Length: 324
Image (cartoon, rainbow, N blue to C red):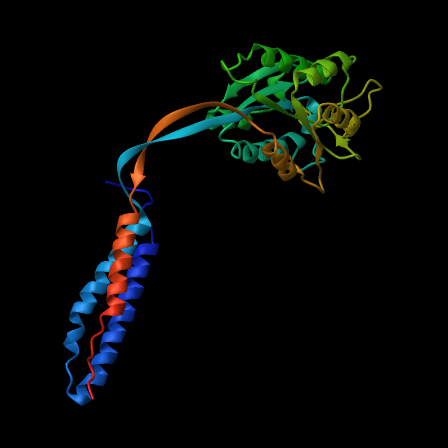
């Protein structure tokens, strides 16, 4: 026999409280009976009865389970692709400690909220790479997220079309489940929005036709900051001045709006990652299949009904200890 719920501090605490109150009740009854030369031991069988149905209540609370039953389980879920910008501008400290570090911390919390969904990870700057294919293994995915750094991709200017084209390739290569509609796909694009690539229009049209919904998370501030590099120096522009990287939300908003998604921001004053999680939760996953699984049968009803019957018997049968 197994238990549906493990033994916790609740059951021993309840037992101690019951025993304490009952001992107090018995001592009070004995103290009242002695001056009248009455016998309080008649309550003895009541004590055994009450101990029995109290123990049955505790057993029912823990959920005794024995035997198995067959239950249908419908599996459903969606595919969530995380597209993370690893260009050098993500090292900017206008969102402490850096844009990338803050985004990684929030992604760790986001991943743990979607245990029934497959999640994949694509990193990009000038080019895009699949860092982790779609998986249910949250431990492996968390490991990949924790190791993200701008040095993982070749140095180059950010091209937002690169990760989206790679995403479309992966969506097309995902085989559908026989007899089921395609899985719903949600895309989370995390970037400061700076885009130095060529036109993104063909990619955006193809992404819209795919049915994927893009949720953009703009990371940074409108004031921006300098981008540090090794040796305590800063990234310089073509004129030799310290480059200032600023949040560019216009392209990110456009990508989200045209794919029926939403745009959110992670700045030094506002963190909209919880809103992003809520939006992803509202994306309906497609039901894939119904299968039958064997589960332990919780038989809590039997000790509960027996305990209630004994409680009723305790109420009906009375014992007179103090007689006139």
